[in-house]
Image (cartoon, rainbow, N blue to C red; front, side, top):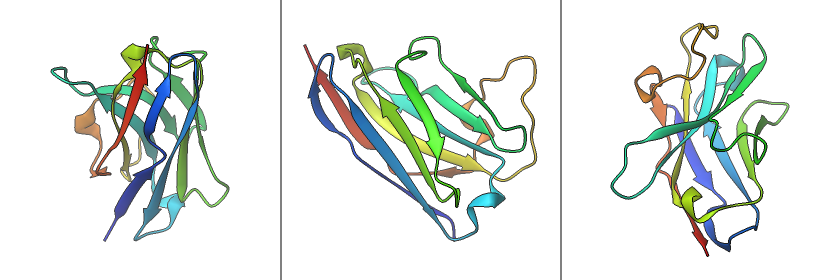
Length: 130
């Protein structure tokens, strides 16, 4: 049974940094074709933050976080990270990691929707104070 567990959330002042982690268990990390971070702020829809297409070896970021957030994996591909710097109050949200194992390559729009992922973590709260 696949399980994704996030950690690393917390409260930080604007301009600060956090690193989120997502531990995957239940199957080899190389199984996943897409791994990603999403976030959901109060009263808003869940939105994609960053994604890795593992078959293509490519990463994509939402415009709102480009240059500030970095998505990465460990060598075993069982831990997904999101390094966040220069945090802003508008980054406040619950952050979720997601994964899927269906073969996929990035298309003309490389930003997947949440419907493209079959496995989800429980989320970790990030709060950025001004």
